[in-house]
Amino acid sequence: MIDVVELVTRRKEEVKDLDRPLVVVTYAQSIDGCIGADDNAQPLLLSGRESFSLTHMLRNNCAAILVGAGTAANDNPRLAVNADFVALHLHNQEHNQEQQTSQNNIQTNEHNRPNLIIRHPRPVVLDPSLRISLAARLVQLRNSPIVFCAFDPVLSPDLVAKQQALELEHVSVVNMHSFTPDFSLNNKPNPQNPTSSSAINIPAMLFVLKSRFNVDSLMVEGGASIISSFLSLGTRFVDQIIITIAPLLVGNGIRAYSSQIPTSSNFPSTDTSLIFTPHVHLVDPVYHQYGRDIVVSARVYRSTIESARAAAKKSSEFIDFSSIAEQDQPRSDELLIVPDFVPVDVHDALVAAMTHKLSRLMGATYMERHFDGVITGYKEASVSAWGFQASVPDDAISLAQVRDALKARIPDDTAMAMVIRWIEASTEAVISQQQQLLSNSSNSSNSNQKISWLPPHILELRAPTFQTPSGIGPHVDHLGAFGAKIAGVCLGSDAVMRFAQKDDPSRSFSALLPNRCLYFQCGSVRFNYTHEIPVDPAQHVFKNVFIERGRRISVLIRDSHPTQ
Ligand SMILES: NC(=O)C1=CN([C@@H]2O[C@H](COP(=O)(O)OP(=O)(O)OC[C@H]3O[C@@H](n4cnc5c(N)ncnc54)[C@H](OP(=O)(O)O)[C@@H]3O)[C@@H](O)[C@H]2O)C=CC1
Ligand SMILES: Nc1nc(O)c(N)c(N[C@@H]2O[C@H](COP(=O)(O)O)[C@@H](O)[C@H]2O)n1
Image (tube, rainbow, N blue to C red; front, side, top):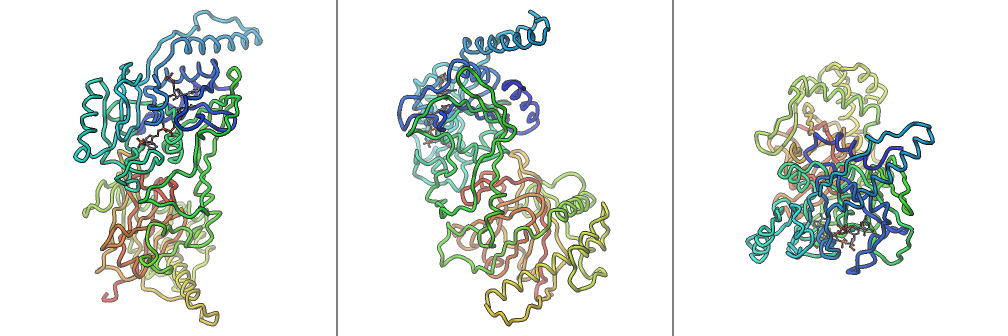
């Protein structure tokens, strides 16, 4: 069975080209899931000697170790490597190996004894309002600590003075004020609420750690708010989780992971019938016994979107109006989201066809910035040869015909025109169905509205990283060039789309566009709202849940302007 430390070393290799360090979340909990006794209590001793020795071996193998302001204040940790524990770990490991080799009747080799080299990781503290004491052990130990804060220097001269005092103690202080996620902007710091006030933007912080401080591996020890914040970001920002489970029942204690991350007044709590069950799945778990403790090591996966799909039956469940007053909300037929619009096999073929077309037209490199500054990290093209006028019959096209058209590895323009006509006709059917529902008349005719669609526009956004971001800034589609209807087919990745009133951007709401969905906007959502696919990964949030975005292709169809 693969050793826990060896697994971390392997993961380092896997993520070495990313613009963030390897992230390993490591903590100790009681069997009933608590990492601390209760608020402001003494730190809870959970790990036994053997599992502590593993923790210190891991500390020795990571370039930095991170805790939140709560842990720094409560535990006053050293965040250093205890050489005795490392020696104990190596001794135990050797002993186990010897047992194995003697069982296998193989001679042990004295020269295999590992050397004991101690490297203290750099302590990192996420401390928005510089609560840390100058006398804190991790400051006084001088292992080059880094403190990330997030305050406005103009509004807080006292914190500027504290920053200078920390710097005199050889602490590197990084102010992430300009990177705070906008959903957490709130001028009143609230210690109970990690996403309120100036919570540190974790993706941005990771980028700074790697690019400025050359930190290639980070151990995240806690506490509860920090663990929850990291885990809520999912697979893109957590590579491995290592949990020590101690044989203890705490009862009323601090739980390591809370799926209900508290919300700020700017990002109010949605109703409790959340369409997500934000469970974190531990993937490929490996279990080891260390003395009396069990250590679980796994990758994490947050399967929010699948549960969203399973639970969200209606278009409206993909729209979160909780941040906008009822009288300011658009009508329910002005934004429609149809999940599972594109069947899985058609999706894969479409992604391949669109990728090929964009590479032919635009080459391999993504454009960094659109001429009007709206789009970042993208490729785009309008393909007039795919307009339905190109020899495609005007009547309904079946899915079987679409599958047929996509059979060729690189479908020709006529085949793609068929596919686009299918998207157009299906969109017309969705609009008619919606109109029927609204008029509530069972007798009304079912005939679909024929719309004069312009040639399709395909837009690819690269998978965003902090260094190579991607997204579409807030905009209203050109009012002079297009008509009143916009539809988009989303391929490749889920995405969050944010809408804000043109005249008052504080009136905003968000929608989840699940991969393979169709979305349709008209009326006020077409004319009076800007829409955006946020560039900042910290804004990929829907109903308090972080939605991972990878490479995404959208196929946009828009009707022609009435004057054309
Ligand atoms: N058993 C174990 O392995 C461990 C146990 N612990 C225990 O955990 C407890 C402390 O947990 P807790 O009180 O939650 O404190 P945390 O250590 O998780 O710190 C939370 C604070 O960090 C700041 N912060 C900055 N950015 C973020 C962000 N993006 N997300 C979340 N927080 C952010 C905030 O400070 P501000 O409020 O100033 O804005 C927040 O209140 C202690 O009892 C400690 O003993 C801790 C580590 C390991
Ligand atoms: N692995 C582990 N087991 C426990 O039982 C714990 N209480 C902790 N706590 C973490 O270790 C920090 C204190 O250790 P040092 O002073 O740095 O040696 C504490 O702040 C928690 O992060 N960990």
